[in-house]
Image (cartoon, rainbow, N blue to C red; front, side, top):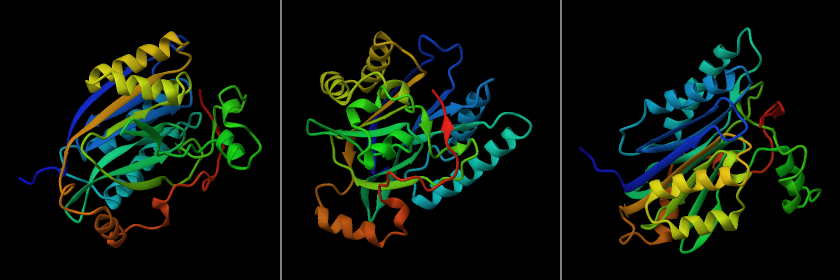
Length: 281
């Protein structure tokens, strides 16, 4: 049996928070997929939508690696199931963000996916970087220079997203290929975490807590201490070994990535490409 191009240690934690009776978040933390889905729609529709999406992607669990085509096909099937769920009730929908293990020319890569405002970060070398770009009204206002980033967390439009799976949106996902390195720590979370803890606090917890399960549990706890106003879900993924890291120079790996079947969807974009503006919170 082929070995995974990235061996990982994983931790995950979730909580409904202090103000919600139902946890509409779902997550998947089984190699090669590490995903978080934040449902919306009320009357348990959001919980059902996020669970259906995670269930569909869960069919790919156990593979050694995945490619963009695998993800697109799973996303298409997930959309079909969520649209069927929507029939006869308020529009159900969900965000989706996360990372999967990919193999590009024999080298281990992170393939990240994002629809909505759940987030994927990379912590490496003491630096925390947000890889995903929020598909939200406030992000578009920030990009247009009409809203300061520091003010976004308090803006009344902070729960309005511009892309989702379901909820009247046909917006496509963003994909990115990120070269993996041993020691990388990937953080995937719903906005119940990022809405309570700023980037510096996230960085400090990831830096101070070595075990990924302890880090995930601590982050959920800290979000609750700071208010717990939304459902909170956290997945932490640590790269232990990465195939080809020592043998393939970065420029060679990047050239191999360009030869893959990657199109313009693999580039970060803060602009909405889908229809629909959806509130969730």
